[in-house]
Length: 258
Image 1 (spheres, rainbow, N blue to C red):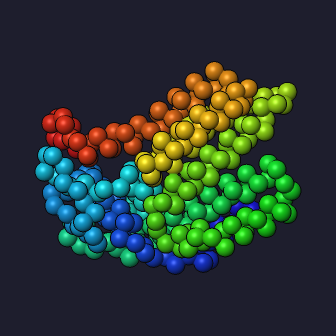
Image 2 (tube, rainbow, N blue to C red):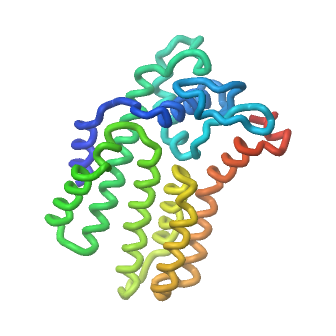
């Protein structure tokens, strides 16, 4: 099923960065790869309005860190064959980097669709799960979003992974073997992935998890909550640090270091 989804979505991918959001995030990734910094002295790139001025005067890309991290490999490989003097502040993104950025989102979309398939497999047979998954991919906006680069896809995939893991926990909680603590840690990681692409998801996903934990208390013992919380906090540290680093830059030594 994973091979089917990857092949289908790659075959129908546009290979384009079809939004100014993603184009600006690729600019930030290229800036990081070439200079080691994520802030710029002035707005630049495909959409200068995506760069926000911080209190210290430098500009940062307005989106969360998830898309930036996803596009680092595309930016790295996309600049391997450019001229040594390439400067992302002045020169447009290489075509190779743009194609790889688009395909990165397509591969991530395949992972989200696989999570949806695995979620269905917990409740129904493989044949119906396959048909429903293909229907979900092709008959909703999911297919359209997989064909280009949109950072909201990362939030969608994170939520799909969280749904699969939490459903697995609930389904296995009544079994004699129980649930491995690492599955709870994976739930915390999935939560962090979704929020790293869309930080505004945090309160809604948090309320949903709390309600689920209250309703199914037997499936979420104290040890499980500890594992999930630790995984969540550790996984969210890059996003939390990135937000303070770029949005506030209150500490002068941090500005000097980066």
